[in-house]
Length: 80
Image (cartoon, rainbow, N blue to C red; front, side, top):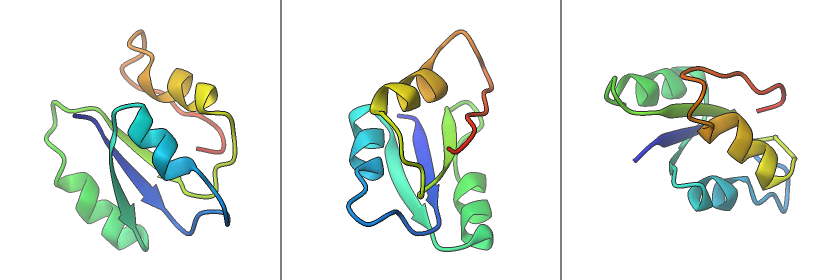
């Protein structure tokens, strides 16, 4: 299962965690960059991982395209 690491505090009322779960991600939350680094290091190298700014506000379709499109082994989504 791919892992999503949320960094920072989400916007009040944000659905980002649920949106990521609906895309098949195991969601983990990092309070700071040190914790994000620790969580990232714990993900096996053969698994897909996304580091997402919890303040991201956008349509779940944008997340799906940016984070799960199999055509690209690596992607960057501005704002995510």
